[in-house]
Image 1 (cartoon, rainbow, N blue to C red):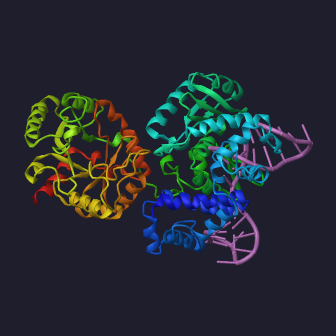
Image 2: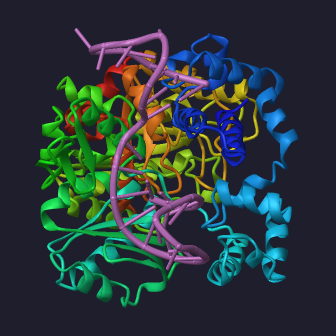
Length: 576
DNA sequence: GCCGTTTTCGGCCCGACTGTTTTCAGTCG
């Protein structure tokens, strides 16, 4: 059973327990574990087999047994019993804004509403008004929301949400009514997908600011408009939450609205132990009400005995303990990157010439660029024949003098073919300056076959990096079936790097896998897979994932000086 | 349902906004 299926089942139990009116803490126990499994790098079924479920924080005796039961039977008695006591479709109603467990229960008890179609029919017939607590405004809003719900507004890619948030933040700064305007929330944590945009503002004139903000052209609809809190829909149907605080509260507000929720809860528990209280306005002594911190995030953390924690780490995944022990890593930054090691040109399916790609890489301040056009099997992508490879090598050689000391490496993104062999002979492979090996075909192969394919590629001395190792396209395609642990172990054994592909819909390998790989001693390569000069800018998305993976610059091969990189490859090639 | 350098029981983060309420519950993040 896949992790996401376990997550879905636990969430379903949590939803139904909540509608039933069970203890919020019991509900939370299920939700918390679901969230942790969703972010877990390993397969839960393997953890269950090896009796390691209890190593997940929040999993006790009962939940461990439930998960084992779920994996063995495909369902649990807990869930079945809940589903017998009420229609499981009630869950769908929770997706309606303004409908929580209490009101869902109420609608079911009083109007027998058990599904979204039921609800829509009741609203249209004007029957909702009869229920206490539901009025004309609720009815009106619900009609609108139900229509929107049918279109299923999904999560947005970081690559789309981040630039949009920056654009809006710039517009808010231009109002000149705020001292600080910062993007917070999951964008600041560089999560691969984003639910809504969070922006925190410090202003001494909150009302004036809010009045101007709602009038911005980007705002399509105002959903909530209080003196310090705004919920807006932007033109692209993305929800935007704005919170305005006083300047001296900015640090605590930024901390609060950056999250994650779990990180905040952990910090608050720490504060509680000391008789303090944390909220968005600061850190306070519970007894005296005295204000202990709030101006900056650094101050908030310091008062709690912690080093400032980079937003990308704030997932309650060990970062608080590390901060307390002074063992936070120095994370890689964009500025550490010295070169691009995965780029295409118009020799294969890229949109720009060798010169244009080299020019743009040099303009970014890079010391080197590896040209890695597709290999011969990728006919649809203009894959290079051995002959064309030689021609390209000559073309690159001819450019060398012009760009020195900037270096252009003659590389390849070589296909790992369906039978597990590479797409060029050994001699051709050894002659490249750099080789990325990737799967572009046979996605439907079995887990064992696919894993073996990747292990073969990693074992080949001429391969430097495994490109977009999982093959996923976020929101479009699950990755192929794969034994991630075996791939990590092989990469470690052979001294190879795994790619963190920076394209917003790839981000592959993902953060949790990259972290696990690093812990296993595997090197990473943050690459953009650029098909045109403007794609180089995607680097920041990959760097975001690398930071979420706790990576220092040292662990990422394209922060190395060129000489070290070439030596790393050459030592391996000696055996060929 | 989990968890324990005060606890194996009694806690479990905290506040804004809305709608419909005549003082606040429910929802949301």
